[in-house]
Image 1 (tube, one colour):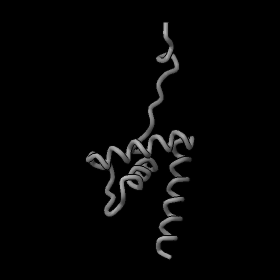
Image 2 (tube, rainbow, N blue to C red; image 1 turned 45 degrees about the vertical axis):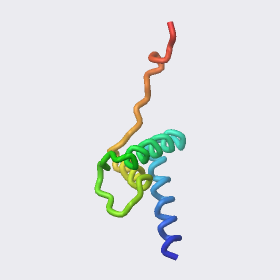
Image 3 (cartoon, rainbow, N blue to C red; image 1 turned 135 degrees about the vertical axis):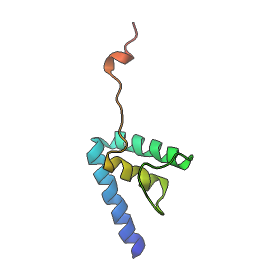
Image 4 (cartoon, rainbow, N blue to C red; image 1 turned 90 degrees about the horizontal axis):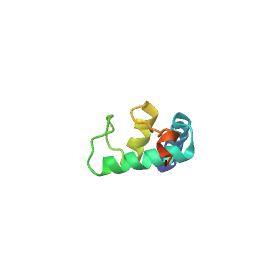
Length: 79
């Protein structure tokens, strides 16, 4: 039962993260990349006792501590 409550909590975090970033794709790329950074030893930007790297990354996105940077379309033009 506690696992079911936790699952609903993580689902809510995911929906909050998607709405913060704007698209499911950008959210997935951002949260996965940040989780890999945390798992590789980079310190989290927020205090997250007992949480895994992915949940920590999602919370950082929701808090606005991590965001995606888009390249200008002009940067991709080959002359």
